[in-house]
Length: 442
Image 1 (cartoon, rainbow, N blue to C red):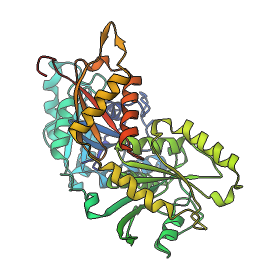
Image 2: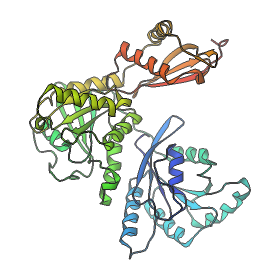
Image 3: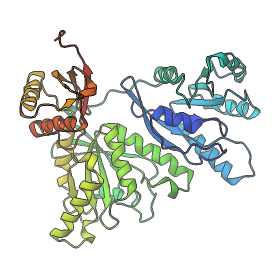
């Protein structure tokens, strides 16, 4: 389900950005009581009951034909609707159904997609009866929420998860399919790298940013293994994106990461590290995929030890949250060190699916506790009764403890470091979860 898209659509100023922030538990969308603030499409990951999906916030829909900006906003929303698995049609519960809502409802009915009519700004239980007027839109049972206060959002998330398509079974390493997404800002050399790997012109290579619009899948064999490479459209900062088709390509790129096991994040050796590079790495980390950082165009940088050390130091600072990611300096143009990528792809995917037996894991935990006992929290000390690995992709560990509030972030990091020292997990994020359990039960 991780790659499914849920689009929030509706007329201006009904609270789409507020709902987006509520569902993604973030404050990345600008909330402003002026219609038309959200002009491009924002995206984030929502997690609910161990499931995740991509949420897209769109600009307020309007059917006016004279305003070029409004036409562009509408086109962006239509692209989000095309790509979505589920559509949230947000409505204003205080104002009631508006004529524009009827036009949007007709558009959504033509899409053929599952639609949830969400009536926002229902802040008190006493006004729930007012939502009955929205049945007139003819798109199903309205669901009352208050995006600002969180009321009803749990029921909304439940309904979204019911409507999302079943996630297709992922091919594991046993099938020797190593799935790699090539991601990065426009013009960092993703298409050139793919062509160098394949030794032929599989995709168009152009110095103009944004040539690759959709994710392009290429399967090939190398050294006895099968690789699936996904060359994605270059992702640039939203303020730099002008064409609606590029908004669409951002979603395709995010979905490519979800479909992959390993993401190769390409950086430009001449440009240095940008904020967008950090955001992309953060998305890959949150999606739970393997991460390799490739510094491309190294042939254009003077080969000296100081340059490499400076780059590694900058990477350590910029990607401190993903310090597990291996770094390789390559040139897609000359092919320098490109062959090193294949062993990295295979190794990182193997680590992504690595399982640690429960006895071995608990032996490690006991040793970690003996070497460095947990600090006290308000006079009380964390107790870890036992641990188990509960899933892979990414490796996820569940620790049964006396009280999860006693775990300090530094001790969580200590446990993660011990896991990496003992079992490697090179290139993959780890998830450490803590669950309360009474000592007498143990």
